[in-house]
Image 1 (tube, rainbow, N blue to C red):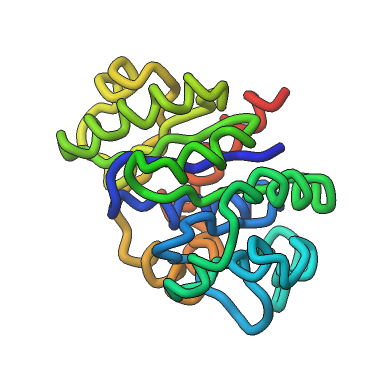
Image 2: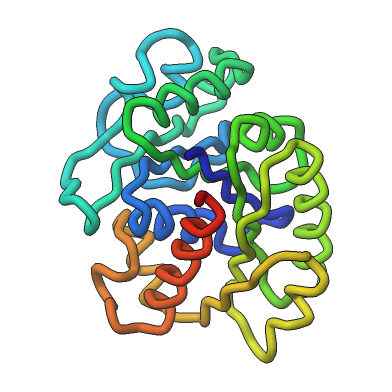
Length: 223
């Protein structure tokens, strides 16, 4: 399964959601934000190299420290404009399909906004998770991202409602999908900075339980 994690607005916790979902699902985390990568990377080839033909998708998957469910394999993206210009973004769909074929599942951290490059991972995706916060602007942008996902047949599995406050019923009604509330927790950001899922540093936290519930929604959709 290829799962696209998208959200119209930047800063809503999209990369954090993608990282934690990849850990819960045992999937490869692919950073598809070609111009503003966020996924922590190690040494070796990255997605820019793959799109430029300098490495294969499998060669670029990094699994240092991967320990089954507690770790996350990842295909990071380069962080230079030169690298972004050298690659062919149209190859991304094939790259995601190759990762899915080799490893079983791929969770894709999509670019923020609604630029053309957002459509490529959604085009390849079997399903999608929409990420938003309670901010009115974030929900409005998420609604536009939802329309694009539906148009490209990337079935919406669930909404990750980050920094949730109050009832999530209205968000579910607006976005037309099951909503999983993820409360604010500073340990989530600390885990992301080290490239780890929150359950490795705070397994009993409400945030960790929220990501587990979100993954379960995705599994239901897959079935």
